[in-house]
Image (cartoon, rainbow, N blue to C red):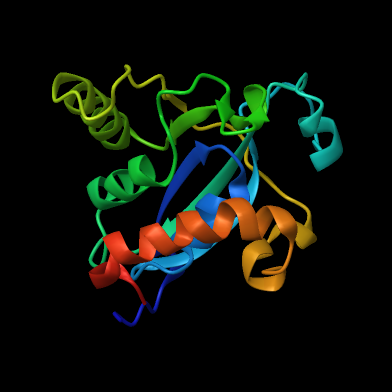
Length: 184
């Protein structure tokens, strides 16, 4: 692992792909990812809470904000992982989790991230990787609200939780098989 002496050298990426526990659980295992923080972005109220976001009327998506070292993992590689962690063809849902808070979205932090995200979606659709069109939103990053402390490292801290056993664990097992060379 590269020794980062200055946190300013790290880049930020923010993605939403359904429940943030799955996305955070996967990215926290990837080389070059220095933090994966569950939280909220894209809404219209200040200081959202999990309970408010779950009601579906705040406009927020459950997101994971990543701090990463570009010398270890590129934004393109982050996109490749992101599109395997969820079904980007489902509008405002992932599996049984339904509502705009579970939408698929990429919140870009600069023009290059926007271009890479849009190009990925165009290629996925052109190559017909999925049976349906990708509906992932690509929007400018807004203010990031960190989720409540109990949401951070949720899968790691609650592996026996029923949702974790039924949903998160199988996704992470598939992820680890697919990206074994990218794991810490």
